[in-house]
Length: 184
Ligand SMILES: Cc1cc2nc3c(=O)[nH]c(=O)nc-3n(C[C@H](O)[C@H](O)[C@H](O)COP(=O)(O)O)c2cc1C
Image (cartoon, rainbow, N blue to C red; front, top):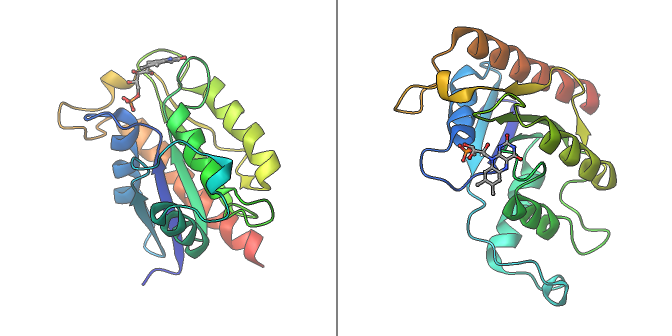
């Protein structure tokens, strides 16, 4: 088993999602001493604070998976200049009840792909703001903003753009390095 375990979370449920495809590319570019497990966050109901003391099974399992991971990798689209609602919903579930957040202290890397020129930058800065309260430790650099993504993946969802592949490989390496630094 690899000694650094990374939980990969996609912010898109779309079949053919570029962001999920980017996560799959990251799995293939991961160094040998680390591994990325992609976790499906599609099944959560809307967060209701009435249920936070006794959350649904899938939330309990999600929190356990976050806790078992050494780091988190988010790959998300930007929706209306921000974090997709269902991703924020999953983040909220795993952050509660107060004092029992699964996110506390986790190193993280944020990446995102968009067909336009912004490369999800506004979503990424909103996610960073959320991480302040969660006491997560996102890497400052590199920032992985995959703009004009339709040209960088083929019709099967394979990341074909060599520059982006190399950048992503270096970003995952940086996350592994960052995770080791924080655990010392
Ligand atoms: C509700 C909604 C809002 C969107 N808002 C933005 C936006 O603010 N910025 C942007 O670059 N793209 C925006 N888009 C376009 C997405 O970047 C595009 O659909 C992208 O392919 C979604 O990521 P995915 O391929 O991983 O599903 C939006 C799409 C949807 C459905």
